[in-house]
Image 1 (cartoon, rainbow, N blue to C red):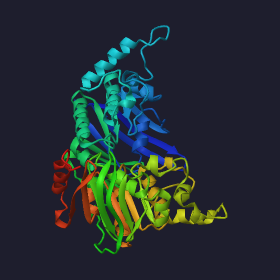
Image 2: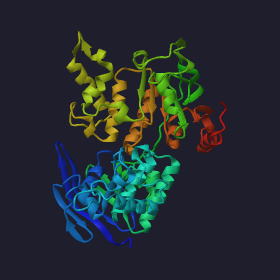
Image 3: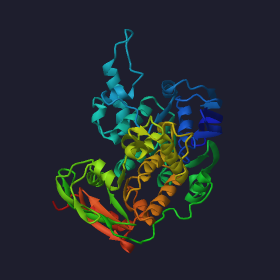
Image 4: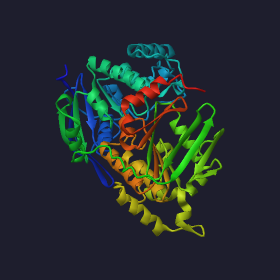
Length: 502
């Protein structure tokens, strides 16, 4: 069955103002296979998938579905044909029920247009049971976890008897347990003959779940390889045109004075008695499972959240628990976990996003110094290799990697003394990840204190000089040197779950 091509595109092109997103792209999906589509941010992956799902109309080329040339008129038409795209940012209505979301746009009605509620509920129940979902058709989607909401999206594939399902960064917000459940579901779809496209920047997942890998670069196909017959070096070389000889880069261990010290910091329900310090030139890693309290701790240090108790020392002197404006003025910077929700104003351009937290640096007598603002924008566009058509292009139009670089530029332009990076490489490609790892090392070697939070264990171990393990709101272990191993980190966070002293 896996030799049967269910969907094929030939010579697909798509141009947007100022950029050719797809250039003569050919790609096929076989029944019963998981086919990875990889490439750097901006390579054209999402554009190609949106063409298949009817969200974009190609400028040229042909789509062949189940052996016949076809036109996909829109998302609902794609769904009816059996092509389903499951977005990274789920396309569900939180106030509607599970059943209403599964059949959104195709509710069963009688000849008077009245909803057939029993039929809707019965059909949705059948789809949910086929996937082994642990919730019913009447649950309000807004009350479900991200993983459960994702299952609602997948239930659409079952309900509409999809032949092709496209997963776009499906594990970005999932725990390891939820990821395993998703993989089990994907393998079940594959066993039933569904062709699956899997888009992810997590190469370990690509090699774990897929049968073939197609690489895009600058809107062009670089090649398709059998997963079992390739390795990370070959795929990386196809993606970025070079190998990553040193994937993780750690700064030289040359530390200066203490920049930040935290003692017995607590916030009810989130974390308790947290203490740590970080020095000039040091990269301090924070690792823990989802819900361990890592982000909440640094947000409290920065002043986004208010602590119940504890002390903070800045450059040797105790300070009052700060607010964000005070933290910025002292020289503290926080790159948040969610760049779209917390780090950027998406409809603004890169120039405005870069200067936004530091208007005092770019204004005089309430008037903006546009030449200075533009000069800083150009400086960091060059330093960080940001791909944008100009200073006023909305950052919503940029790839995830380029968006993240603007978040970094926003803080670097103020010359911080401490920079906190919360999931700095989440959702970005391998080439951009390497560039950010190199930047972290450069910042530390320039004398900045750096705190890195990452859910990717190899990353936090690879870039840090010391690593703190957190579990259930408490720091349970500290590792440096030869003790910084995956085994020790796993042991620390797993053995202390449910057993951390109050």
